[in-house]
Amino acid sequence: MTAVSVKNLSKTFGKTNKALKGVSLELEESEMVALIGASGSGKSTLIRHIAGLIPGDNSQSRIDVFGSPIQTNGKISKGVRNDRREIGVVFQQFNLVGRLSVLTNVLMGVLGRASSFRTLLGIFTRAEKKLAMDALNRVGIASHAAQRSSNLSGGQQQRAAIARTIVQGAKLILADEPIASLDPASSRKVMDNLERINREDGVTVLVSLHQVDYAIKYCPRTIAMRQGEVVFDGPSDQLTPQFLQQLYGSESVELLAKEDQRELVPENTGPEPAEQETEGRRAFAYAAG
Amino acid sequence: MTLASGHQTTPSPIAPPKNLKRSGLNILGWAVLAGLLAWSWEGADMRPMALIDDAANMGQFAAGFFPPDFTEWKMYVDEIFVTIQIAIWGTVLAIVLSIPFGIMSSENIVPWWICQPTRRLMDAARAINEIVFAMLFVVAVGLGPFAGVLALWIHTTGVLAKLFSEAVEAIDPRPVEGIRATGANALHEIIYGVIPQVLPLWISYSLYRFESNVRSATVLGIVGAGGIGMLLWEYIRGFYYAETAAVIILIIVSVSLLDMLSQRLRKLVT
Ligand SMILES: Nc1ncnc2c1ncn2[C@@H]1O[C@H](COP(=O)(O)OP(=O)(O)O)[C@@H](O)[C@H]1O
Ligand SMILES: [Mg+2]
Image (cartoon, rainbow over all chains, first blue to last red):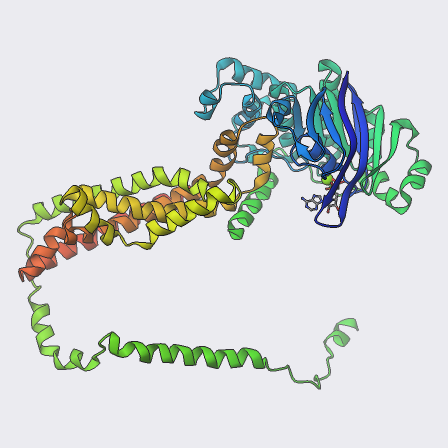
């Protein structure tokens, strides 16, 4: 069965910024596919369209996930909330609620399915809590369940976000540069988790990446974007440095950077860096108000 | 060598330009202010000489306040408790209403056709002073503390809803989008995504409003809406200055104590 089908999707921000130009692609069920491209090439924009979070341009186009329409000709479908349950999104910035516990954040995976009345009061069943704990256990951070999620390191927050998609029972995971700000050890843990969910549960995974080495290592197939267009779609092992040079010219440097040449945020066990980051963000939010 | 040459700047041949536009505006600003003060002088019946001419009178008047007469202190304390109780109910009811109204006046949560009317309604509730509401409610529900509670409730709702919505408009939208992406509904987004982010600020604003409502509640009695103000007004009207002084001292002490307590609590949450 086709998991994701995107046909002729375009997106223009403002009047002239064409972020996506007639993108078409198909993912089969249980595939693990990498989406690569330099920053600004449209990866995040594409993922947000597939998740039904933003509508495309008002032109002939459609996106279907597991055969049900997410958006058609620039209009998001009415029943999209039901389809979103099937789609787990792991964002580039860890979109957890910092002040709530890791467990509560992961439990939010059930919100789309459970009785609204009960969950609006913050009541979760024992079975739901067990499901969440099992998911946290699978991604290896069960011991942090009671902590505020803002106290976790970047890699741990990303794994909590993956646990949320497990609880959600998502059949498709869209991960938007989940390892962009992580050090190699945490990056590997996050990618290992995605791969295992793909292999063991048959979940379809589309993961956007900044670096080709991870795509080659984890994903049999890669879709490469450049300036809002798909410029390559095929087996990842074709992505030799020579071929990338051909596709991207000077931009290929950014995609080929090896782990040790990147700016790294170390995976810490203590709370400090993660805390600082959210504190800063909160301070900013207040200042803006 | 580089350090020395780095500091070697020849005196600049061009003087820093004087910002003509800025200094012109400055003079205009002061002129407008002076004009405004002159215009208001007569209307405000400004008679500074009266302070000096009537100094003896005023001294006599002030002397009447001493020593303060605390014989009826039990009654004063009872009335002060009533005043605080009015403030508690007025504030709590206002908080309850301000949560939905605050969210309904946040641009980033609701469409403009909900946001704008709600904001105008809150503007109206805020524009009218508690005392005016109190006078109206005394007519509607009769003399006594309940009229005071209703007055504080309406006015405070207008104030808190605005403060609450300002906090909501400054949230980080990303966690909310994370919740939306799970297939949760709009109420889920608010309860799990918005409220945890704004709660410390909301609590702080509410406590601050409680402090200010205790102060407002001390005068509600003047229009018959209950509390210590009623007593105060009767004493002043009847020239019982020693009793008046005692009541004022008790008000100062209790308001300061509550302010301190509330400030402590506010420090705890933020
Ligand atoms: N919300 C937005 N508003 C305006 N422009 C945007 C927005 N999101 C993305 N863009 C633009 O779309 C283009 C693609 O961005 P993005 O999808 O974030 O690329 P990538 O994820 O590959 O780095 C960029 O030019 C970016 O500036
Ligand atoms: Mg991106």
